[in-house]
Length: 514
Image (tube, rainbow, N blue to C red; front, side, top):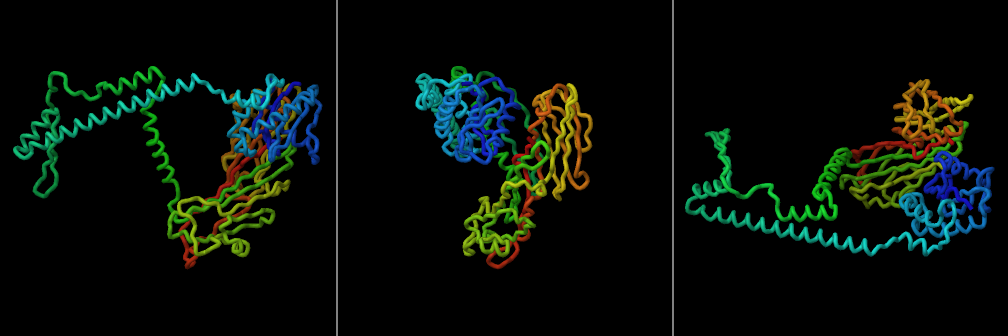
């Protein structure tokens, strides 16, 4: 058997973890994985499917697929045994078979795949042996860490002793300086300051009680001999230097200063947060899949209205919401929201109006979604791609069209291009070839009523037409496809209006043409 790739994908074919065991390009493996959901069809009783060049051996795992991509000459029985072993391994590292948990444990899952498969061939190994190999316990490493930690603890103790000794010395000096105040305050303090090698400036006040500028004190030559020197190396510094040299402990002081830097960043973020009594955020994400002809294969929308109360007096709140013609959308309120008032009047308030909402905590009060649809009328923007090959030269024409009333910002269209590309024409925005990522990026900062359509053309040599897919698209908008808006916010106790701040944002979760 020769396994080309072992993968975990979503039901829509989105790769979450993909481990390749042979030399294969990224574009090739992405094309194979993108074709997999289309090959399954409506009937999912079988466990493998074949194309002209490869075989897919798969197993559903809740909302995911565990998939082996093999060549057609591979032994199907051995492939099934390998698939069963991998299916037992994956829950060991991702107990919750959801996309976010799989992404968090991606490296552990890939290491487990490597223990089972080597160069596309299965190793003679079972589940227990794989788990033992991945634990990688080392007695020498544990001993080294214990010795290193003990040295750090000793250095901290030594530093504490030195700090205590310095504090005691300072206290004794202060007591000695204060003891002479009863018999001769001026002369005693002057002598004490002179012994310390510094003089405290005297503030002089005029007849009206205002301070006058004091003349700068004359500098005295430093006393001869060795005295207490600031910045001299102490035993603590020597101990820490020795530890750094021995155990390669670098930059311990900057680490201590890191919380202060983080605190400053947090303060900067606090400044940007609205100070209104009630803050409402409308967030919507869109997931789109188009085919190469520009047709909509899947359009899914998910949104949420979040509320945060900043003032305890405004915690008894109700929110009047307006939403347009969105019969296709499905709405769901938080369990503590009065569903009757939402269904009748589109009002969001606590189901028990004698209770208040939590203060200082962001709470999602309303969610909505548009189930996967093929209705192109709801598409914020459509992208069409026409690649044509003539001899060794390939020319690609891209076009966007937006029939939506939303103004789209930061439109990015990224086209894979494994060869050097030359941009010939751009009607809107600008385009460039990025050699590092091997892509052509078309950027339009704003799509509004002045430029609802635009096109771009580029060419490349020795590139197949299929190599320009999949194309990814991203943009943002200060509006939603659902058309939901916050109109008023008031107090449930007396219907008095409350000050509020509302923001609306539409983002792209996934937009691909393949």
